[in-house]
Length: 102
Image (cartoon, rainbow, N blue to C red; front, side, top):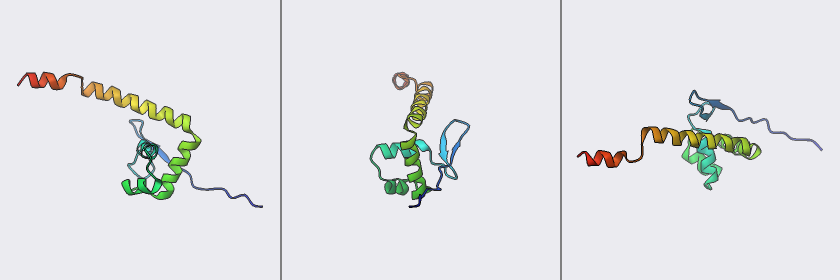
């Protein structure tokens, strides 16, 4: 009996902003994982992100399933950063203050 091993490896690039992108694309790890968690199949994800190959999508999903705690911590950090930026650039009540000025 012989052992068969996959040689495909996921290659992620961390941008200056700390976003993990799939190598040679502008597609973030976040985008693929969120689509997967919302029930999209790998084939649907490839249709939505045509810069990706099916093998890349499977590699991302495999990475997520094998390193769930690490990836969930990354996603949580990204969500927190998004909330901080949103609060900074879209303070609550700004719409009301702008409308009151007109």
